[in-house]
Length: 299
Ligand code: UTP
Image (tube, rainbow, N blue to C red; front, side, top):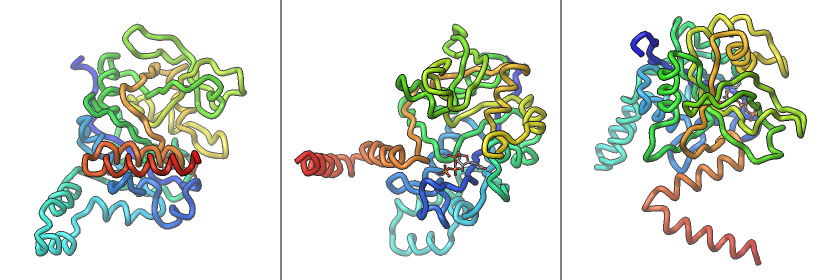
């Protein structure tokens, strides 16, 4: 186990255009939209930290300053909160600015997820890395955080790439990137191929690739030579496929936790409700509101 290179750094890509959330995302990155009152990106950063990550490289595009400001010290705000004796809020603000060693790099054009990861390479160096999509949430309360679950599997497997998988209902596979392979006997799935949006009825499994990855340093040379694929974008999946088929191998892991796709409108609304229902001060009122809305809409 000691020969496995430790995963210390993470990349959080947050430079996509977020077209599904326009006009909200015209000036504000979708990763900054709040889940109740916490930006999605903060929840993702918290997951990385709880997983043992020591350094985070954020890949930003438009709205970069909003993201940087969020994780920076805000002297005026903190002074005002102090003056008004709003100590809980003050502590919360101080917690955010002390959270993590955070570097941001700019992806000048949204040329794909693979490209976004590559833009962060220099800041990472020749090391293994975790990648957490900034619009994808995993609620693993009471269990290990999602990225930790992947890192543990990466270590057990002697440093192989491990990506998070989720099972979808039959008939939904054609909407996603689907993996082919076999259970490896240790709770992971040995991936033999990946198919992007397979034609209905042709999917090799019901396991889709979702937004968490732990990648060995061997991914870097593969990614460097990955050519633009679908939509002219450099696809991370193309590099992962090569790692799985011709490289050191790649496994998948179904994360023990609840995943929310906060980059999709319904997924985002679901995440807001699920996280609000975890808050004792909001739960009774929200449940009453939901019951009232259901009654009105059923009528
Ligand atoms: P998505 O495909 O969900 O993001 O990428 P998008 O393109 O912004 O979404 P829509 O479809 O237009 O609404 C998944 C993650 O990868 C990042 C996004 O910010 C998101 O967190 N990403 C994607 C980049 O950082 N750069 C890219 O070029 C593409």
